[in-house]
Length: 301
Ligand SMILES: [Zn+2]
Image (cartoon, rainbow, N blue to C red):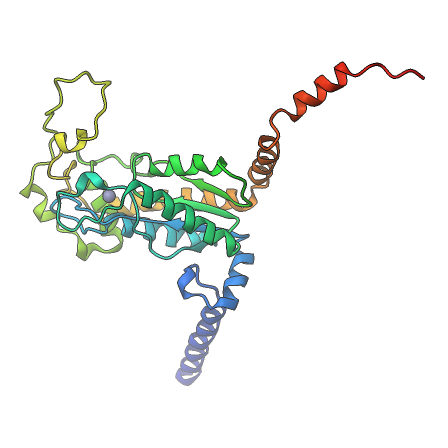
């Protein structure tokens, strides 16, 4: 009896190994070249450019916090709804943290060029629907996504705005969720708890200093963030927990998986983009044609 159970257990392990060998990784860099083509079919030509940034996350978090949080959510989402994930991408907007050790910041020209060339290379390889997730930069990604109408292309770029789940789970106190605070650290703790040091949360101030408060609130200037948060820390991470993080991650994973499904099924956006590019090449053709018809002498039979 014991032998039978042992044999069954060995068989189960072998079958599991065979199945995992046959299943396709969602990670671009882990696929063989021929499996990449199978992956494209399985993903319905849908790929994810999931990025992060190297920047200080208060006194408690790792420099790669944004990448850890994005990759964790995207990895889990592709287990529900398969898509190909581009390798780790660290080019984003973070000039305002250059005074902090460990920050890597690229120029705006390079950020846009890298996004453009990376998505074009992804599309050349068959990724006809690309979703950008988590790349750092207040206005960078929306600006880049809008620039997709600049010139004709045979692929569509999508993005998810905001961080779904972050506001759905209430923080332990009203001002805890800012940059480097409770929400971000809780999400890291859900995946890599050893990287977070909540006990250091009180070592620096996260309170807004209000050094530009004399200016009218509708005026905007680049030094605004440094004026308020010179420590590059804007939320209290002391009460961060893995459980709170997991609840946020679950909601984020759900919304990414839903987005992936919608994108894979989406026939309308590519068609509208194609129609737009055809029309924008001849914006006056319709008007000229109708004018010409109106001016033409009536045909006599
Ligand atoms: Zn962050």
